[in-house]
Image 1 (cartoon, rainbow, N blue to C red):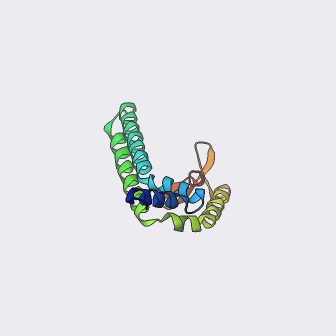
Image 2 (spheres, one colour; image 1 turned 30 degrees about the vertical axis):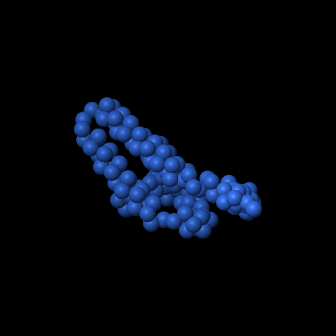
Image 3 (tube, one colour; image 1 turned 120 degrees about the vertical axis):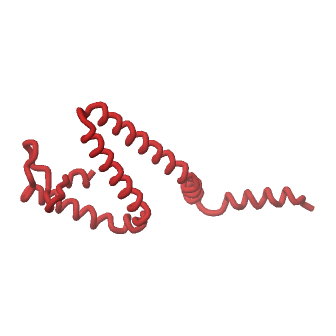
Length: 137
């Protein structure tokens, strides 16, 4: 007769043998996802703080630094709100549509783009302007 420990060991072995190796590997990768998320947030915070220090040390006055901090806070709020609203499965489903829209914006720059700094890279929509090449990245 087998002991309770031997039965538990056999259950653990059979549990590891269930499914193909790729699914077990995916389970291991996705189980560590929060660690990667925290690491990415820490790195993003470090880059934001170092960028703010660089702007502060390079700017002649506080107006550029305060403007940078306002834009940084708005960007962070937009980042966190979008991360709560947009689900990766929906983003994956609309990848081709987004790619097509960005390609249309890139072609639109050639036709109605605004020339700034000697090159035609900007699109102006009323008070907003932007570079479609940044979206393409």
